[in-house]
Image 1 (tube, rainbow, N blue to C red):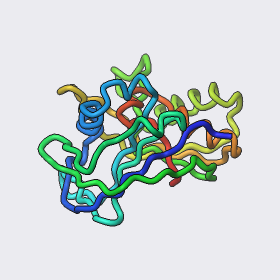
Image 2 (cartoon, rainbow, N blue to C red):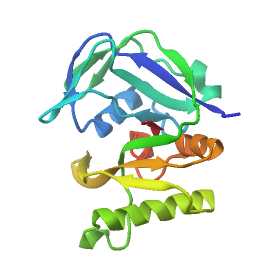
Image 3 (cartoon, rainbow, N blue to C red):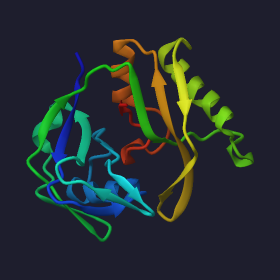
Image 4 (cartoon, rainbow, N blue to C red):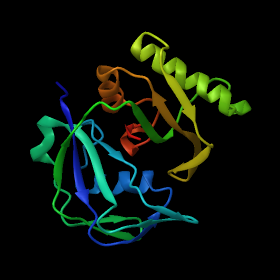
Length: 197
């Protein structure tokens, strides 16, 4: 049985937020719950349609999803309004969704620091690094990894680079484990956190 769940807040009002909103979302949740990183909470990147540097939200479709231990369900309360940078999210009543296995999982961006990153890790090399991390986690290499185009993630004014990653061929237990643990750096910001593709 999985000890983690997703708390899902429907977004009631459309509009836009920064496309690269990992750090801003982290700050917004931290302003409500200072210790959320230490508690192991993981916000997932909000979905929407990219319009240049913004992410257009769709009321009724877009949602804020936070992965956290079941034991913390009574401790999370974001209220009805959440400020992300200069943008405002109007949130509906949250509901709980269990973590379920899936044949295909995807993370919008995974940040992996490697010894050769300063020389420029290519897509193929990046896939190898991801495979090594997953192989160490599961004790085998019987899964598929697909790496998307490299993109920046800004944290405290510094630019980091990561890639979208899709993983296929995991067992049910491995699928649950990857969703709970994730891989790479900045998981408290939602990087390296996996969801159903």
